[in-house]
Amino acid sequence: MDGAGAVLDMGDWRAQLPPESRERIVNKILETLLRHHPVSNREGLQELNKIALRIEGNFYAAAISQSDYLRKISLKMLTMETKAQNTRPYALPSNPAGNSCEDSAGKGKILKTPPSMASISNGLRHQKRARLPPSNQNETQNPVDYISQLPNDIIIHIFSFLTTKDAVKTSVLSKQWRSTWTSNQYMSFSLPPGSSSNLKSFIAFVDSVLLRCTAVQVKRFLFDAPCHAFMQSSLDTWLQFAIMHDVEEVSITPHYWRYNIYELPQILFLCTTLVSLCMSQCCFSVLSAVNWRSLKILRIEYAELYDEGMVRVFSGSPVLEFLELKSCRGVKHIMVESKSFRELVIDSHEFRPDQGLMLKIWAPHLLKLRLLGNSQGGEFSLDEVSSLTEAELNFDMESFALDKVKAHGDLVVGLLKRLHHVTKLVMGSWCLQVLSLMEAREVFLPSLQCRHLILLGTADHEGVPAIVKILESTRCLEKLFLQMTCTLNSAVEFNAEGVGRHNSAGEEFWNSAKWRIHQCLMHLKHVEIVDRGANLLLWESVLSLLKFLLQNALCLDKILINCTNSESSQAVEVAGILLSHPKCCPSTKVILRCPSQGCPSKHVR
Image (cartoon, rainbow, N blue to C red):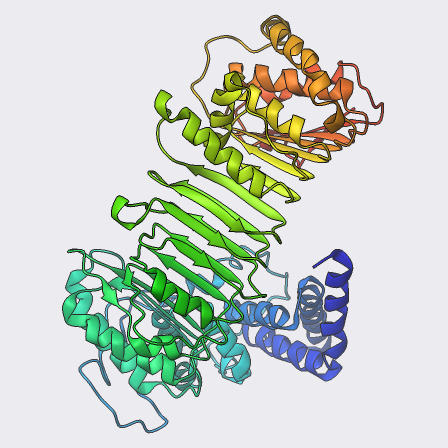
């Protein structure tokens, strides 16, 4: 959304908020202040009222939506009300609604973790408290349960940020919350890996929570815990419960000790209310039809996939927008016809000789493609991606062997030919190193239409030939981004005099390449360098490029040097050198952004 749209939305939610709602919230804040700081005169009451108005006004001005406004207010009131509850155990509250179902973790089950609202109040505990008139009255003399007066929709919104275990703990805060947690629509059950001794009590706890649940709909169901054969039937039951309650978001992350793979129940593939699904280490065997008519987000990690099953998934997901496959194997074709399809991420794809060494992608409406991670032993083929506007080639195949140079070069060049029309292109270090190795073979890249180019970790001397190749092909380039990776420190001191000597060959190289990239120099406006602790040799190479661009880029507006290492002084030295270097465009700005400066950025003219 653009800036104008954002401003319009902010105005809309404030206009729709009735004034009496704000007055009611101010009164609630005032009541809370009075409880902790009782006053006995009119002046003290007026002072507290001003503080309540100021608190509400600050949150009203800072919030980006009505839900954000209510969340900030509720968290503030909780911080004022909540006291430390970290010393005594607590029992799972019974369901006052009259649910007669009981199990091994039912009424009176003692849990080991003490109650804590630190997850809610951490962000607010350091806020400066208002100075109030002194009072000799004890705040415990007249206890009032103000938290119970919060609207249920605010309480449920707070629950959406907590795990189910933490939501149960909140029952100690007020009488109302002892029953409200049972209507929580956001369920999140987790155990750290290796917690096998707690599995039985964990299963009993989940069963008890679901039996006490009074929510008509379960919007979110998250499971992240060790999973063994004896508890897979329980996980089936829990998923079925969520599906029968029209679940919208499901995340299943089982942890295994003996390489067991949880087989997803077939009923999950018929969940028509599902909007987001994330699965890790699950058996994705689709034996029947798929009806995911509402699914927009699908993430699959560490899974064995099959073309036939994936065809059913794609045909049964007509509004799919985002797909991510991480460390998956088996699938050879990704064919998505959905007109809603926006982004595809392939991360560390596993190629196997018996399952095919080619992954073909056919998605005519896809807008963004990202090929990431280590994908050894195979190739990517882009059969139909004509609607792409952004592409990222940040994957690597294997070590650079002489007998593989041509094959790797053909792969990268072939991908660039299919991506010639994208307006934003990201290239990782492996792909650029391949292009550098292909320099001697006189490989010609296709003409690229990208206006925003991002090169990751390739600015050293070995990566310079690849940079020239790319700049030569991107004739309409407007924005260039270079990320310098951390390398071994050099023993050579970094100073202006030393850089001048070491860089002479680099500057001559760029001047000789000027005729090859002259069209790029006509449109380039913005150059950004990110330093992640690079050594002297890497900075020398980058400095040569920056000097060349300063002196030859006709429309260059600014060079931004973003130094992420607060202990590095190289970026400051580079900015000083660029300050005295001749500029083709007198209005070009050099901006240094360094953590050690104590401010976001430092401008150098």
